[in-house]
Amino acid sequence: MIISWMKFFAEGDTKFPEINFNNWEISGRKDYKEFEVVYYKSKKNLKFNFPKDKSISLFSTSRINF
Image (tube, rainbow, N blue to C red; front, side, top):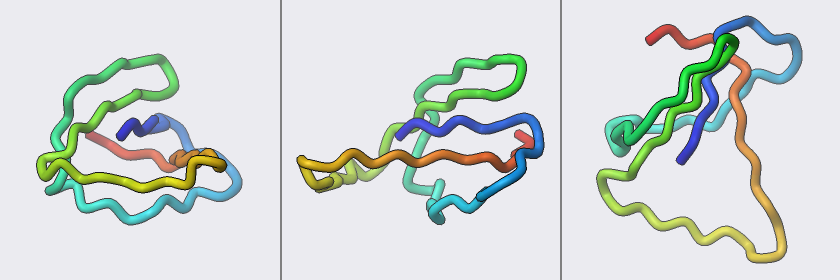
């Protein structure tokens, strides 16, 4: 799972699906001036069955302090 954490307040829809971060561990990070990209690896080898004919995009526009 890859999440971009914004370092600023953004207007518009800022909802994000609820995630239990106890099931994930950070496997990498890339820090940029206005956001940070965090790579997560499942601790429980979670499998997702997304439809093959559709793409799914998740994003966050909320400011999170680490």
